[in-house]
Image 1: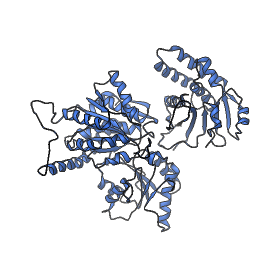
Image 2 (image 1 turned 180 degrees about the vertical axis):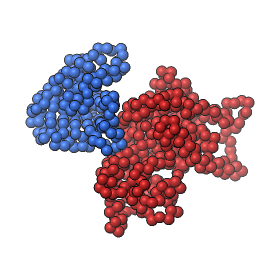
Image 3 (image 1 turned 90 degrees about the horizontal axis):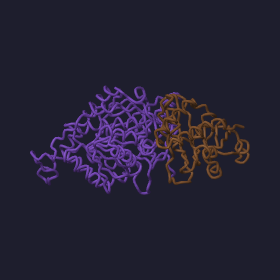
Image 4 (image 1 turned 60 degrees about the vertical axis):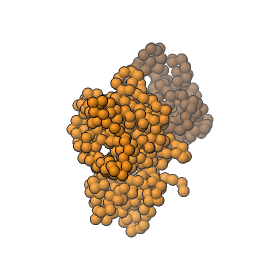
Length: 192
Length: 394
């Protein structure tokens, strides 16, 4: 059994946590990795806290239990941190990435986080500027690749371009906007 | 054989299999977590990718009734459902089997009400286990896809002619994306072949009566024939599983044995838990415990003799049931396996752990703990509960 990387996405219904997990898994599959992507299903509705999960491995994945000890957490909406335990199950050296304009040190202080590697990126700001609305999921993927080195960035970008082209055939501006957003977030993500 | 590696959820995999099967008729009513199977398939119908007549009905009872009528007429017919939907079909399930109709169902396992719950357990299909339907369980998306393709050949075989349901675990598989291989349309269509109904009701040159009354004079003979068909299905399932292996690379039988040859303790289960279980078995082996796993694929017909033979040398057996028969005798897999092992002369300790009802998670460490506790009890000569509920607050 090889090492399986587990990721948890926190978001609010409608922000694209599930889509982000699916896109990431699909991109990892494109690099020949074994993958799983699944959301947590409860009484979801717009704005309610939701979670989605990824498993990525070089070896086939047979596990079908829930992810409770991820090594990476992505928070699409930092206001969730007050009501949801976003660091639950993370190991001492775990990675947590927030969508916020704040600096990692400010987040650490404000949320009293001990240990962990904290990263921040203003994915909502980037999305509003590049895509025209607050859809932080694709830029967060760019930032995630930067801080984890999970996938080859250029190949992931290429893969996303292909998928977005298929989905938004009649809206080329959405495709370009998403790609720019991913690239910008990749450049702008901040560490402590 | 051409194969394409893709990321698909269990529901997408099932919908893809139905597209490739290209049934004449599909009749269905939506229900979580199976809804997506039909939602995706309906887009294939709308896009003209299949020749199927899709019949949206007002209830699952009507869906199964429409499917029965269409199959009687001579059309290859499929449906999909879950949980309460399957329960609402209950009356018609027996009729499909009694009329010897090779209907094919994609079933997504979900708990039954009450309390209302949308998550996975196997209570729904277990409710129909004596209805005369062949029942095949799947560990993951790949198996759901492979099993549905094989289902066509099994159900329509002249020695069988029984309805068949292929199941996946609700949400755990149905809504989880995994890597899998999709075969070429042509290869799948060559494998399943063209449907040639034995006595289509719409053949006006040979008029027949279907569903006529059958009292003390012939009812028993007809039910005896249904029982024989279920027995015959055993050979057909193995034959189709072997041919599938030759054509697509993965052979299928009644069960999958994992590290069972020298196992002193083995878990027996259905569905997705087998995947989690395999990781637990590997961990137990690293700790020096000779553990193994038997994943049952075919629950109906129940391969009793084959299971007894395969588990004969295993002294400690833990049967994990994701449903409760509420019979005060343990879960359905446990009681059936117990009966199957009765004539085996070796010494066994067979215990039952009912787990995961309503989608309650089971982790690798929990399975390790269950099996190692059984091994330690046996080694220390201590008694251990024969039937117990795992992972419940009580």
